[in-house]
Length: 190
Ligand SMILES: Cc1cc2nc3c(=O)[nH]c(=O)nc-3n(C[C@H](O)[C@H](O)[C@H](O)COP(=O)(O)O)c2cc1C
Image (cartoon, rainbow, N blue to C red):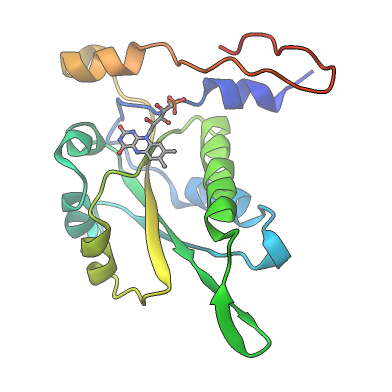
């Protein structure tokens, strides 16, 4: 039996990327997975911008990353900027969408799992300058940059800086969860 759980459990915030370019059709597949996610009232509050080093705006976006993130993200050949639209049209007025962040998160996860299935690796990044990103893309008040997902093929761990290799090899940690209503405890996740 092929389990989606395999890709979910193999996904991790990858630290060592190969600079080898990623073909557009692979990103298209990941993007389709994201865009097919459920969303409250089917509002689809996500907006994505995929950027590669060939794009003029790449360096500007890369510079918004916090220094610690730049160290390892520099080799990732794709940066996917995930933006949330915080409001939606209701009876001719724009009103807050309280599920917008939630729905963007689901779409981001679908993107990353699909990437994993295709042999790509990913790493979500919240550590970047959101004000700068808003300026670069002239985003209106209602749109918030939330995450940058670094994407690429796995690189050579043995060539990575020791601190990056160490983070790459660190086992993933998860809190124990207690299921209620008689299901008992979950088996330990790895
Ligand atoms: C919203 C969000 C923001 C994150 N920001 C960063 C970041 O700025 N830098 C970083 O190295 N990892 C970042 N991460 C990755 C988390 O540290 C990582 O998902 C967590 O430690 C669990 O590890 P795993 O993804 O390998 O399972 C972020 C993850 C999420 C979901």
